[in-house]
Amino acid sequence: MQKKDILEIKKRFKKDQATFSKMAGCYVNGEKKIVTKFIETFLNLEEDEYHKYLEIAKKVLTGTVGNNLLELRFQQEVGRITEKQTFYMDLKRTRLLKDELLDAFYESVIENYHYVGNFIILLFHDAYDVITKTEDNLKLDESEEVYEYVLCAVCPVSLSDPGLSYVEDENMIRARHRDWVVEMPKHGFVYPAFIDRSQDLDAVMYFTKNAKDPHPEFMEDILGCQMKETAQLQKESFQAMVKGSLEDGNQPSEEIFMEVQDQLSAMVADYKATYADADVEPMVLTQRDVEGILVDSGIPENVTKEITASYGSYYGEDLPLAESLIDAKVLKEKQQRDKEERLKKEVSLLHSELEKVKEEKEKEEAGDYDVILRVKEEKVAKIRSQIIDGQKCIVIPVEDHEQAMINGVEDLLK
Image 1 (tube, rainbow, N blue to C red):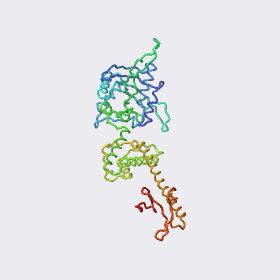
Image 2: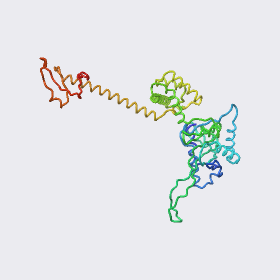
Image 3: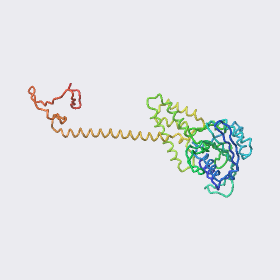
Image 4: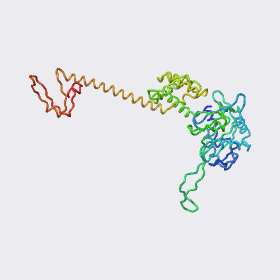
């Protein structure tokens, strides 16, 4: 599923281009009871309602592919179409005109959707004449196929905020009447999925507003599809996998994971540079790739094998895109840490150079002198010359609390 396919459908959701035939809905309260059901001819809606419903439908096709928009596959048995897939094929074919199918769908959502509060289930039916395109993407004025689909949006319904408002009839300021307001959808789907400018009856395009909370029960129990992680959850799983295997090591796991992220980012950058002029799929991260990244990050062989095995076991054949596992925040922290380390080294080198210059200067100043003294200003007046045992000496009085250093040695005077 590519962004360009989604945009081709989404760009039609405008006043002069939308072709929705029917829209059905079911409003459910916080006790999971149906409050009302309705079905409308979409083109007969009042203009304000028309635009609001279009905004809701458009939202289901909004977000990042692989994170907010997922391509799901039905949990098919070999050579057989599942009951769920048959159900959604019938829902599409009957164009939302069969009450028993609508009721069955509403009940499935109400029973399986884990949500606390009021919500509304909306279904839209549409048929799109897919215009033929040439190899250079020029459109021809003829239909290649009719893409017929249903779009579902599940939207929270919340009380409007309390407040004061002006009541014109009374010419007074009163407490505002609180309404139940339909919000933008949290979850939704399009069936069948639109892939490579054609319908795919074996796939569903699934929408989740929050990539950290995709509601797997919607994917599995309502749609009958195989659960799929969002890019955000894949990233978190990969991080836990690597850090969990490094916890017993001597080197901090955070520091090593930063190096892993750096190696992963470099690998993706190399892949993009290599295939910059080619129309290729994004890079998928294989077990072999993971092993190479871990080795290049300096992770011990036994830990590398453990992480690589966990990776293969966890993801199986449904491998994530390499770019989905890159954590921009971690990379930024590593860049900052590397910068600080470079500055520390530069400061240390500067100190060493200054010490060398200082030593060389002292040697130059010393000239032919055998004794050179460096004392605090207040002790200069106390220094005197004295003959002791026939030997000319320089006497410097030292109090009990005072410290002295001679040629870098501190403990000569005790």
